[in-house]
Amino acid sequence: MAVSIKEISDNVRLAREMTMLGNYESSEVYYEGCLQMISKLILVISDSLRKTKWQQVQKQVSSEYEHVKILKTMLQTLRLETSVEVPTGVRKRDEPNLADITNSDAFSQNDPDIWPPPTPVDHSNGPKSRIAVAKRSDAKKYPASRAGSSTAKKLEINRHSKSIKKEERPTSSRSERIGDNKPEKDHKDSENNEKNEPTDEKKFECHGMERELADTLERDIVQKNPNIHWDDIADLHEAKRLLEEAVVWPMWMPDFFKGIRRPWKGVLMVGPPGTGKTMLAKAVATECGTTFFNVSSSTLTSKYRGESEKMVRLLFEMARFYAPSTIFIDEIDSLCSRRGSESEHEASRRVKSELLVQMDGITANNEEPGKVVMVLAATNFPWDIDEALRRRLEKRIYIPLPTMEGREALLKINLREVKLDPDINLTTIAKRLDGFSGADITNVCRDASMMSMRRKICGLRPDQIKQLPKEELDLPVTMRDFEEALDKNNKSVSKEDLDKYERWMNEFGSS
Ligand code: ADP
Image (tube, rainbow, N blue to C red; front, side, top):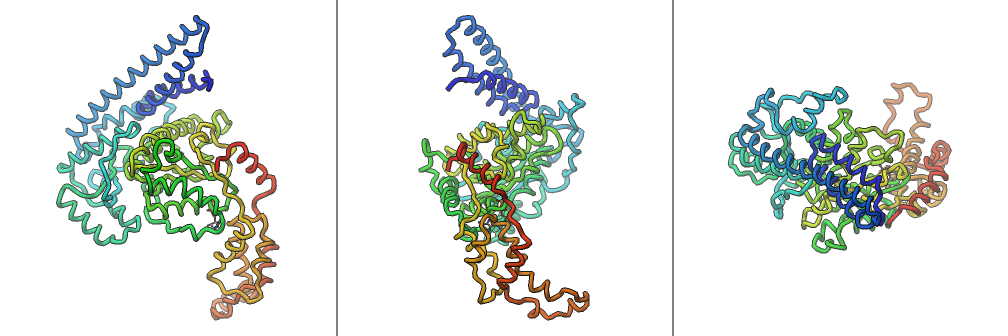
């Protein structure tokens, strides 16, 4: 494949940007990528003058790369020393963490354009930011993968320096929140663990500003089992099969999904709104029983510049730590609009770049059995997605409007808690609902089931309404109720929208 000069210059620019931000892990990945591209390019250049010029570029870029590597090594050594000698729990607020300074803070002090991050809440006497999960029987040491090695090191250091930290128990352990069968027991166990070091809980710990961000992520993580099963989702057999193959099986049979059969880096669910994409993601989490990170784009697009990419990095570090994990990013289009598009802000470009780097990082990680991290994304606007991200979301599946069979199933699911008039004909209603999305059908059912109550209370005063017996309101839903509901509710997806999806899937789909 021909090497694009634009891609080389983009990579150099990003590598330098990442270096400026102190994000050396990412910067290394960009430098490596770009050096590889330059080598490939040199191989195919026949003109000797041009070749020499490119060799000079190569030399310059590789010397920059060497400097970055030296900086990173120095920083890691310093971090190690600082963390061991001065544990975060006892560090004073006016003694900044070296790692924090070398990341964005130093830049924000010098650059008036960069907003300072919010003043961190002083937790010196409170609980440390951490998520605790019951240790898996097969859990190994957290792998110091390329992209996550700094945190991995910090984790190690934290374990060693634990004995000098005074920590309170977090308000709730993660094992309770993920719907563990024995929360009581775990609660007691973890209390005992606090007393009897070493603990058998696996904890994700971090410091300084990262702690604040980890808290934010923790709030957005679906800790408890979303409890949506395949059977709760009407229709969409093909999508369920593909998701099983792409996400569930690699988690169950990591030894088989290796080499050429390696799991897809990411899966993108594309389709009109309200067709069940979020439900499918929740079902994947339930069926896999893995740590599930449900992140909306808004969580990742922090208004504090420089924070968003840290958030993305932390998200992936957490996912690797708790692997096997599934990261679900809803409305990924709002995070990753096309490069150079009008809506593209410099900060959002950096978030996108970080996401790309992290997604590349999980490929190596996924080679390790039991450590699979899968990215599952959803969008209603696939045409707005950046090409580079689209390439990384290797499996792109279409979640269509429900079929006739699906519409009948959706009617049954939605009406399972209400009484139905014996004359009601769900097949007739399903025919009338052609072109409606799952969410539209839910709305029609909700409306129809309230019709008789509306008729009953029409013209009554509030005190009369309150006195109405329940049986008089809870009447069976009739065909007439549906007729009225259908007159009021229109479909939300137009023919033009469907054509657009079809065109996009024909061009970029891979199901
Ligand atoms: P999307 O993420 O595609 O916008 P959601 O998964 O959030 O759609 O679905 C919205 C609502 O529509 C759900 O809460 C559910 O009530 C209903 N729904 C949509 N598709 C289905 C389906 N296939 N089976 C059951 N309910 C569905």
